[in-house]
Amino acid sequence: MSIEIIEIKARCTNPDSIREKLQSLDAKAIGTDHQVDTYFTVPEGRLKLRRGNIENTLIQYRRSNESGPKLSKVNIYKPNDADALHVTLSAALPVLVEVDKQREIYFIDNVKFHIDQVKTLGSFIEIEAIDESGGIGITRLNEQCEHYLQLFEVEADDLMTHSYSDMLLELNGK
Image 1 (cartoon, rainbow, N blue to C red):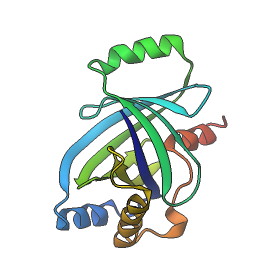
Image 2: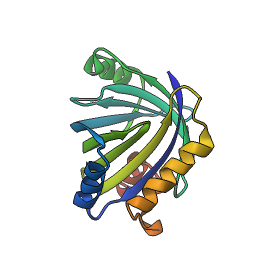
Image 3: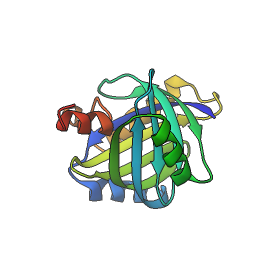
Image 4: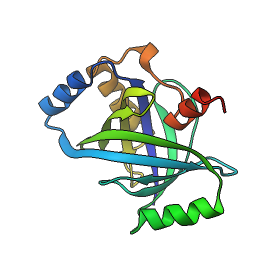
């Protein structure tokens, strides 16, 4: 499945405040997922296998490293057995890095929210305005992200330009 997502990632100094605001908006709480994302070395874009107790997904995507809302072009495959797929992919491709996190997942309509606690990196909020059918459009997705950025009072200097994988690689000197 190919989809377009406008997303932001920001440092989150007060996860309780974000959680309370989501609850006040009647966001649908999906649950807390312990996720391990394995990133593989590929010639273009990024390829990661997410293994969790809620979400198990192979994700290939392209996204620029910039602050604020950014467009991701995403291809998704939901395997029946993520652990077996991990063994196969790890045998065929070099593992670049693994990201270990606890992720609270919420939805309001087509917008997905993550409150993340990432091992060695800290707390973050992610907002993903998702267009699975092509019917919403980039302009509306951007508007949705901007709306929630303001609602959650995310400061410009808290916005992250890079993925967790990039941050871990940088932290490890790679």
